[in-house]
Image (cartoon, rainbow, N blue to C red; front, side, top):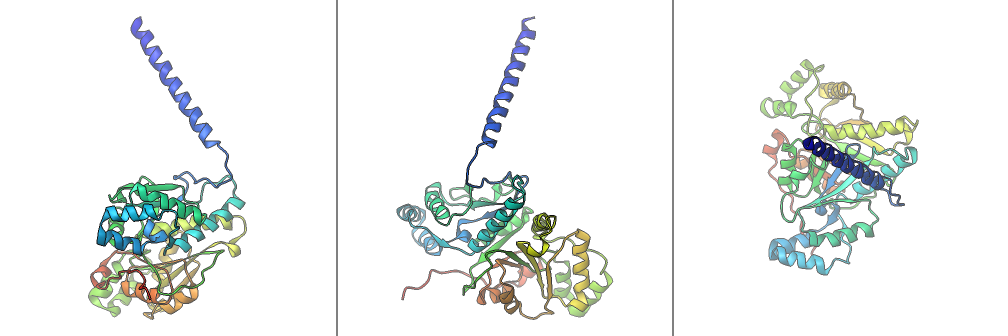
Length: 361
């Protein structure tokens, strides 16, 4: 009899704890604030950015590499009230925030929004300067992950990351191997004015949106065999590449605007910028996107011509490509470029871009 009563007491306590937990969660969820709250991760398109992509920390990085972590942390603490300057991902993040503002106007209760997470291996003491800088620029970034010198890659899935942007190519490669869309960002040599009302994202095709299967044929057998192969398999969709899921996430948010009859005023625009020839190998690309149920706003087939001048006209907030010579060409003409280290093309990427602090005159 006493055992039955003990079980009843345990059940009552458990039920009480669950009720208390539910009430506490409801209280937190219903807290009101004038500042936009981050959406629940399961509904959001989560963009994880490193501190060195969001802010220009080239000089600080130099201190870390030449004088060590203690001097670096001390410098950051000493200068924590000085906002860091914007980095390569800064315009992209601002554009994401603009899209969120538009979505909130149309869908006040929706949580299908961009959620920006600061993902950094900085020590927590450096966090004060990062927070002060974020507040200085009025950025909506509430979720932080500061790993104190350890790689943050293991946390990306826990944060339900849709895209990871970093300056560290090894971490980016590790993220892609974990099945997460990722790219290494580079700062352009010149600054150009970017749209403040429309997020513009440009993608290469092969080894970015699509797999590298076609590039393998080009590298091993030449263009003629490639053209024959693409014609033969025109109706067979290409396998997906590392950035396909990010394009898919952008498409879902675009459709939110289309549903409100705002296709022509959509604050998200996507571009396919590929070295493929349209007549010889373009049909398979377009049919692949169609088979995935994805739209691309503009498709530009360059037939091997340089991408830099065209990107200069598009003015994307970010351009993804797997080939370093395209990254360099874009960077030289003012485009914010992000390298996707995936596929056979990496065997041919021998150049390495290393950013240095500006020289004092």
